[in-house]
Length: 379
Image 1 (cartoon, rainbow, N blue to C red):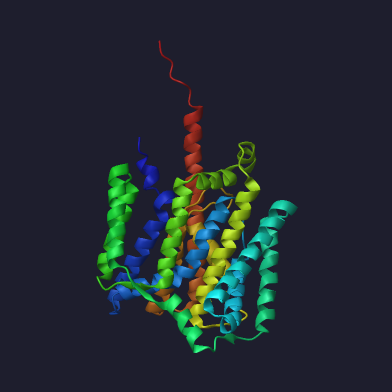
Image 2: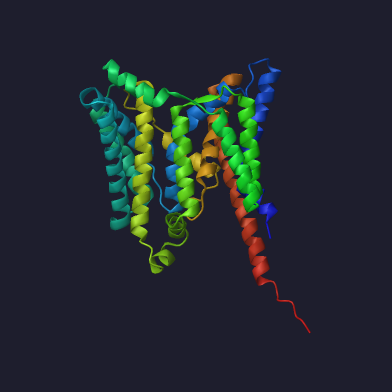
């Protein structure tokens, strides 16, 4: 029997409700003030573009949180990858410099994972330390000043990798059709609703809707990780490791390997985001991306990912990132001022965490009530 209350409840679909409600409220406010249409293709593309780097890191962070671990160093790793890219690309070219940046990020993730898993130090403490240490490496590499790419040919390659515009109207309609078809075949109303929303947004944006390449990278990465988590043995084992590590170990799952892999994935994703950041500006300064790790964690929390492991959705994390950047975008368009942004964003995160916590508590209470109910006596 389908549990409709669970499927459309605040815990399962709350982030989608919040995102859609916020968009339409901002659209109404913009219209009332005589501003350009808020739900135009250009503005929707800008929101997705602004959220793309946090979304990429957030997808990998969700995998990390699912396994029951934590990584505070992602923003520093992204800045280090950007510094390696900018520092080397003028000498060895964009492609080799990007590979070097990804390898550097992977090495940081491997070190983090090895210390946590084999030394036994808490992941929060380890990654808090590497956050500071890696930021120190950035300062050393940049010598405390901004670096920039001076070779025009390399700069052109970087801009092409990051700033190419990709038409998205027809692909979005195709995705919407696939979601609706999947929902009808598998009897999943949430997939049908998602397909209808995607189709509606595509039609609102118009046939000329296009986005920058990072948005496409985010969509492809999210789809790949979602597929692995949803349909493969690896995904089921990742959830098992986060849900009960000891039970997973006794069932034959290599807990150390899966958590180590999550650390490496988190750092590689951060490194790739750092490469996109470096390509976007063609330069890097020592304080780049400072504090971004908190935005990434906030996006995961808004998406309902548990900080205790065993539960999380990469699609909802991306929706959480879009929600945060929709707020920022709305503040800028409505000229509400930056003084209130941090306050309101913080309230939104706390409110989301409260909704998820209360919802989970009520569901556990209902389950316990059903489990402890006396069995019906038959004559």
